[in-house]
Structures are given as C-alpha cells and as structure tokens.
Image (tube, rainbow, N blue to C red; front, side, top):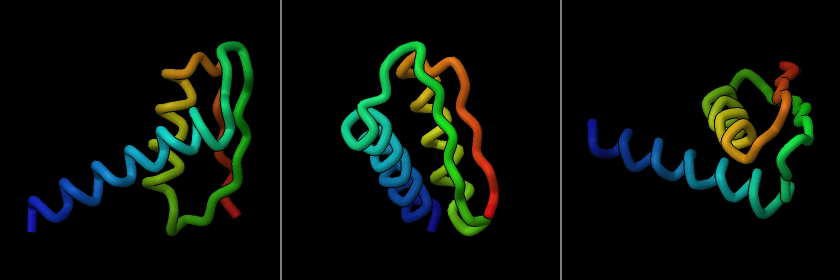
Length: 64
C-alpha cells in the first residue's frame, strides 16, 4: 500500500507541475490565487509549491 501512495503522490506532483508550467504558464513575479475544495487540498498544496518554484511572488488558496 505504501508504494501505491507513493505513485499517487508522484502523479499529483506531476499534475501540479504541468498545471503551473503548461496550463497556467506562470512566470516569475506573477501571483497565483486559486479556489479549491477541501477534497483537493493535496493537489492545491502541490500547485502552490510549484508556483513558488516557478517564481511566483504569492500563491493563495481560497477554500470553497
């Protein structure tokens, strides 16, 4: 079961990376504001991490 979680986490991380770099095309100096349900908090956190890696000055998640 540990391996399955690891694969799941790797996929979430890759999805977040693609969302930030390809889907949003986030550039250094930009800000990110997103809404997310509580069910998607893990993905939203990873998106936030990748936004900062891409140079975002601020990344904010608003729960809905």
